[in-house]
Length: 197
Length: 168
Image (cartoon, rainbow over all chains, first blue to last red; front, side):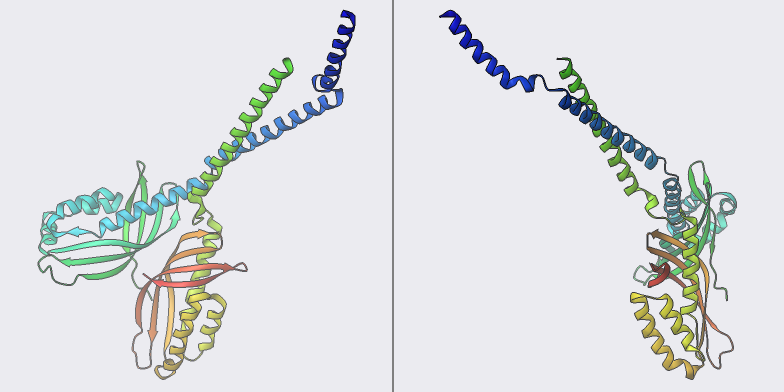
């Protein structure tokens, strides 16, 4: 009885084992296939990671981006400086001149330092408020610490006495040289582009 | 058991590498996309200079006019203008053709300064300072006017053409 039972039992168990045998102990070929797929997956992943790293590094260390960034910094600084130089309120001449001074360097800066009390009084007497707005600007020459720009400027002049008077609007063409001093771009020269024919 | 640990390690490594790779590419693409270098003005010195030269020449040609040889201006317009700029020039040209012979009108244009504002791919904008003189019969001296133009340009078949002219 017991031997029969045991025989039957072992019969069931061996049948189960037979059924699961291939999964528990795969033959040599599929195992190699698994190894190959893992290796392939690792290689593909490594290639992706490697190329991603290189792409990132190259994008972050792009010389073109550096030049373009410098150009854009010049555009922003030149716009601000040229607008400042075309803006003056007769009620705040001293502030205006200080702003001119702060945005310039070199010869232009020196010339502005020479604006004396008499000139200041004269500017105040004119009772005008001028506001400059750059309507177009392009960099024509770009070095590491020097740049040249051309700018189209709209200057609006209001009469300080007669508030009802129509402001006069002029459009001026300028060429300006900038120099990078201590990390900031400053105006070194600012000249109107005269008609020349 | 050992096989299972190996598989877990391998899977972790693969996933980590994929995440790193995707992160790298994503960052690179976003850096490139936001890069100020997408505007090649002055960054690509050769193309910038080529553009300035082309626009300067083209503008001088289409904004100069001699009542004795209007065909020259018209031919230049055909060659270098496109889109709205071409249409505007046609209107202006018709007007000139009617009036110019009676006045013996001669217009000549000269570029004072030009700089590239934007240059990306086949599109560009250029800031141009230009003087135009007009001389009529009976004039002792030419009348000179100063202009500031924002010029839009497109590259067609390897050559820059002016598509828009906007006085500033």
